[in-house]
Length: 279
Image 1 (cartoon, rainbow, N blue to C red):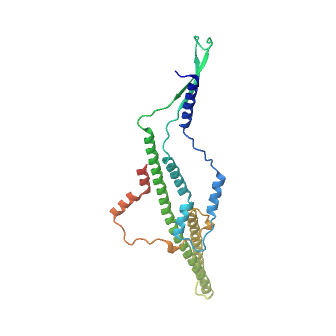
Image 2: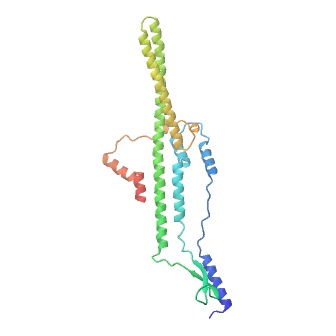
Image 3: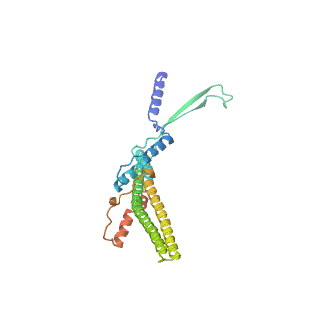
């Protein structure tokens, strides 16, 4: 039978063992909106090189500044951090309560005490290993989602890059047509003064010039909209984004693949299907 000091030492050892086996809580990481906004503003106002924007530099800035890519990458990093940590054992339980030593109820008893209970959960079937496997698969699914988001954003960037070049060329062509129409109006007026054209002919030329001027304004607005979309895709302010360089576009294939090859490539490379398979 244990003596008093030995029982106290054993109880102290048990308590120390229980505290040592407790799971360490993860320290909180408070959200700092001001710091996040400051980093976004700094990225959007990043100084640009003097030459025009190439597709390679646009892709580099997109991977660094695009919000969707940064969000997907952060989700994968969080899932990967969880997967790298082994699932801890359940925490021990320690409970205290009153102990009735005599009498029929607690009011009539003259002698009360306290009891303490220390217990450990012993799970069967190795659920910790199963949880580790679940965390690993979740991290792989998050990685597939991050890759899919980056690929979709890259394809959208290529589309915006090419559209910005085409819209800029279209705006330049519309401006040249407007200038030609204005020159035609001047010629028509001189012809009318010489008796070689009527006032109706001059008015028709003026209408054509006004129409060409309106189309030039619309084309310029479309070019600005494409430039803003390209800047937003790479995470820059529109005033800091340079005009895209036509020579930076990749060469398109001259041979059109067959329908079977396109079907195979679409099934194998579709980002949504890849995410679905991972999940």
